[in-house]
Length: 215
Image (tube, rainbow, N blue to C red):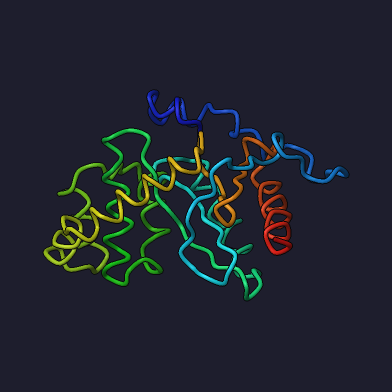
Protein backbone atom coordinates (compact mmCIF):
# COMPACT_ATOMS: atom_id res chain seq x y z
CA UNK A 1 0.00 0.00 0.00
CA UNK A 2 1.47 3.33 -1.08
CA UNK A 3 1.56 6.39 1.15
CA UNK A 4 -0.82 8.33 -1.11
CA UNK A 5 -3.38 5.53 -0.99
CA UNK A 6 -4.02 6.11 2.70
CA UNK A 7 -6.13 9.06 1.59
CA UNK A 8 -8.54 6.68 -0.12
CA UNK A 9 -9.10 4.33 2.82
CA UNK A 10 -9.55 0.58 2.52
CA UNK A 11 -11.05 0.60 -0.97
CA UNK A 12 -8.02 2.31 -2.44
CA UNK A 13 -5.74 0.03 -0.45
CA UNK A 14 -7.41 -3.07 -1.83
CA UNK A 15 -7.03 -1.70 -5.35
CA UNK A 16 -3.32 -0.94 -4.97
CA UNK A 17 -0.79 -2.41 -7.35
CA UNK A 18 0.46 -4.93 -4.81
CA UNK A 19 -2.98 -6.50 -4.79
CA UNK A 20 -2.06 -8.65 -7.77
CA UNK A 21 1.62 -9.17 -6.99
CA UNK A 22 1.19 -12.72 -5.76
CA UNK A 23 0.61 -13.65 -9.39
CA UNK A 24 4.04 -12.37 -10.41
CA UNK A 25 6.68 -14.93 -11.51
CA UNK A 26 8.47 -16.47 -8.57
CA UNK A 27 11.76 -17.03 -10.34
CA UNK A 28 14.08 -14.14 -11.19
CA UNK A 29 17.38 -15.12 -12.76
CA UNK A 30 18.92 -11.68 -12.32
CA UNK A 31 20.36 -10.61 -8.98
CA UNK A 32 18.38 -7.89 -7.17
CA UNK A 33 19.12 -4.44 -8.53
CA UNK A 34 19.46 -1.22 -6.51
CA UNK A 35 16.83 1.30 -7.52
CA UNK A 36 14.60 -1.44 -8.94
CA UNK A 37 14.27 -4.19 -6.35
CA UNK A 38 15.46 -2.18 -3.36
CA UNK A 39 16.42 1.32 -2.26
CA UNK A 40 19.81 2.30 -0.85
CA UNK A 41 19.44 4.99 1.79
CA UNK A 42 21.54 8.11 1.36
CA UNK A 43 21.49 8.60 5.12
CA UNK A 44 21.85 5.37 7.16
CA UNK A 45 19.36 4.97 9.98
CA UNK A 46 20.02 3.85 13.55
CA UNK A 47 19.47 0.20 14.49
CA UNK A 48 18.39 -1.20 17.84
CA UNK A 49 20.49 -4.37 18.15
CA UNK A 50 24.25 -3.63 18.25
CA UNK A 51 26.34 -6.41 16.78
CA UNK A 52 23.47 -7.84 14.76
CA UNK A 53 21.94 -7.18 11.35
CA UNK A 54 18.53 -5.61 11.88
CA UNK A 55 15.48 -6.27 9.74
CA UNK A 56 12.45 -4.04 10.30
CA UNK A 57 8.99 -4.73 8.95
CA UNK A 58 7.06 -1.49 8.47
CA UNK A 59 3.35 -2.26 8.54
CA UNK A 60 -0.14 -0.93 9.22
CA UNK A 61 -2.86 -3.07 10.77
CA UNK A 62 -5.42 -1.65 8.34
CA UNK A 63 -3.51 -2.66 5.20
CA UNK A 64 -4.81 -5.86 3.52
CA UNK A 65 -1.39 -6.47 1.95
CA UNK A 66 0.21 -6.41 5.40
CA UNK A 67 -2.45 -8.85 6.56
CA UNK A 68 -1.67 -11.20 3.67
CA UNK A 69 2.07 -10.81 4.26
CA UNK A 70 1.91 -11.96 7.90
CA UNK A 71 1.93 -15.77 7.36
CA UNK A 72 4.68 -15.49 4.74
CA UNK A 73 6.73 -13.29 7.04
CA UNK A 74 6.25 -15.57 10.06
CA UNK A 75 7.72 -18.54 8.18
CA UNK A 76 10.63 -16.44 6.94
CA UNK A 77 11.43 -14.97 10.37
CA UNK A 78 11.65 -18.42 11.94
CA UNK A 79 14.46 -19.28 9.51
CA UNK A 80 16.58 -16.16 10.07
CA UNK A 81 20.17 -16.84 11.17
CA UNK A 82 21.35 -16.01 14.68
CA UNK A 83 23.12 -12.80 13.62
CA UNK A 84 19.85 -11.21 12.41
CA UNK A 85 17.47 -9.33 14.70
CA UNK A 86 13.89 -8.87 13.46
CA UNK A 87 11.35 -6.36 14.73
CA UNK A 88 8.12 -4.77 13.57
CA UNK A 89 7.45 -1.05 13.36
CA UNK A 90 3.85 0.13 12.90
CA UNK A 91 3.42 3.22 10.76
CA UNK A 92 0.58 5.63 10.09
CA UNK A 93 0.60 7.84 7.03
CA UNK A 94 -2.58 9.48 8.34
CA UNK A 95 -3.13 10.89 11.83
CA UNK A 96 -6.27 8.84 12.50
CA UNK A 97 -4.30 5.62 12.04
CA UNK A 98 -2.01 6.42 14.97
CA UNK A 99 -4.53 4.41 17.00
CA UNK A 100 -3.19 1.28 15.32
CA UNK A 101 0.38 2.19 16.22
CA UNK A 102 -0.67 2.58 19.84
CA UNK A 103 -2.45 -0.79 19.78
CA UNK A 104 0.81 -2.48 18.82
CA UNK A 105 2.92 -0.81 21.47
CA UNK A 106 0.29 -1.21 24.18
CA UNK A 107 0.17 -4.95 23.47
CA UNK A 108 3.96 -5.03 23.55
CA UNK A 109 4.01 -3.26 26.93
CA UNK A 110 1.52 -5.79 28.34
CA UNK A 111 3.34 -8.83 26.95
CA UNK A 112 0.36 -9.68 24.72
CA UNK A 113 1.82 -9.25 21.24
CA UNK A 114 2.32 -12.94 20.51
CA UNK A 115 -1.23 -13.74 21.58
CA UNK A 116 -3.07 -10.88 19.90
CA UNK A 117 -1.05 -9.44 17.01
CA UNK A 118 -2.67 -11.70 14.41
CA UNK A 119 -6.07 -11.38 16.10
CA UNK A 120 -5.97 -7.61 15.52
CA UNK A 121 -5.45 -8.22 11.81
CA UNK A 122 -8.29 -10.77 11.84
CA UNK A 123 -10.66 -8.38 13.57
CA UNK A 124 -10.02 -5.64 11.02
CA UNK A 125 -9.92 -7.68 7.81
CA UNK A 126 -12.25 -10.59 8.52
CA UNK A 127 -14.65 -9.32 11.17
CA UNK A 128 -14.70 -5.82 9.61
CA UNK A 129 -14.08 -4.15 12.96
CA UNK A 130 -11.86 -1.13 12.14
CA UNK A 131 -10.53 -0.78 15.70
CA UNK A 132 -10.05 2.93 15.10
CA UNK A 133 -11.47 4.27 18.39
CA UNK A 134 -9.87 3.74 21.82
CA UNK A 135 -13.09 2.55 23.44
CA UNK A 136 -13.77 0.05 20.66
CA UNK A 137 -10.20 -1.19 20.92
CA UNK A 138 -10.55 -1.60 24.69
CA UNK A 139 -13.78 -3.56 24.20
CA UNK A 140 -12.01 -5.87 21.74
CA UNK A 141 -9.13 -6.41 24.14
CA UNK A 142 -11.51 -7.21 27.01
CA UNK A 143 -13.26 -9.83 24.85
CA UNK A 144 -9.85 -11.40 24.26
CA UNK A 145 -8.88 -11.66 27.89
CA UNK A 146 -6.94 -8.44 28.40
CA UNK A 147 -7.87 -6.31 31.40
CA UNK A 148 -9.67 -3.29 29.95
CA UNK A 149 -8.33 -0.75 32.43
CA UNK A 150 -4.76 -1.99 32.16
CA UNK A 151 -4.94 -1.89 28.38
CA UNK A 152 -6.21 1.70 28.32
CA UNK A 153 -3.54 2.69 30.82
CA UNK A 154 -0.85 1.28 28.53
CA UNK A 155 -2.53 2.64 25.39
CA UNK A 156 -2.48 6.18 26.84
CA UNK A 157 0.91 5.92 28.54
CA UNK A 158 3.87 8.18 27.92
CA UNK A 159 5.97 5.14 27.01
CA UNK A 160 3.64 4.10 24.21
CA UNK A 161 3.39 7.65 22.89
CA UNK A 162 7.21 7.87 22.86
CA UNK A 163 7.47 4.62 20.88
CA UNK A 164 4.89 5.90 18.39
CA UNK A 165 7.03 8.99 17.81
CA UNK A 166 10.16 6.88 17.39
CA UNK A 167 8.37 4.59 14.93
CA UNK A 168 7.21 7.53 12.84
CA UNK A 169 10.70 9.02 12.86
CA UNK A 170 12.24 5.74 11.70
CA UNK A 171 9.70 5.36 8.89
CA UNK A 172 10.46 8.91 7.78
CA UNK A 173 14.19 8.22 7.99
CA UNK A 174 13.86 5.17 5.76
CA UNK A 175 11.66 7.23 3.43
CA UNK A 176 9.41 4.28 2.74
CA UNK A 177 6.54 5.05 0.37
CA UNK A 178 4.22 2.20 1.29
CA UNK A 179 3.64 -0.90 3.40
CA UNK A 180 4.49 -3.65 3.97
CA UNK A 181 8.15 -2.81 3.56
CA UNK A 182 11.32 -4.36 4.94
CA UNK A 183 14.20 -2.21 6.14
CA UNK A 184 17.59 -3.88 6.41
CA UNK A 185 20.28 -2.71 8.82
CA UNK A 186 19.46 0.96 8.46
CA UNK A 187 20.85 0.97 4.92
CA UNK A 188 18.27 -0.53 2.56
CA UNK A 189 14.56 -1.18 2.14
CA UNK A 190 12.52 -3.33 -0.17
CA UNK A 191 8.84 -4.16 -0.68
CA UNK A 192 6.45 -6.18 -2.79
CA UNK A 193 5.69 -3.02 -4.71
CA UNK A 194 9.32 -2.78 -5.79
CA UNK A 195 10.04 -6.45 -6.36
CA UNK A 196 6.79 -7.51 -8.01
CA UNK A 197 5.52 -9.81 -5.26
CA UNK A 198 5.42 -10.18 -1.52
CA UNK A 199 7.37 -13.44 -1.77
CA UNK A 200 10.05 -11.81 -3.90
CA UNK A 201 10.52 -9.07 -1.32
CA UNK A 202 11.67 -11.73 1.15
CA UNK A 203 14.16 -13.09 -1.38
CA UNK A 204 15.53 -9.58 -1.85
CA UNK A 205 15.64 -9.09 1.92
CA UNK A 206 17.82 -12.23 2.15
CA UNK A 207 20.12 -10.71 -0.45
CA UNK A 208 20.31 -7.43 1.48
CA UNK A 209 21.09 -9.28 4.70
CA UNK A 210 24.01 -10.90 2.90
CA UNK A 211 25.15 -7.50 1.64
CA UNK A 212 24.96 -6.04 5.14
CA UNK A 213 26.98 -8.97 6.49
CA UNK A 214 29.79 -8.19 4.01
CA UNK A 215 30.01 -4.66 5.39
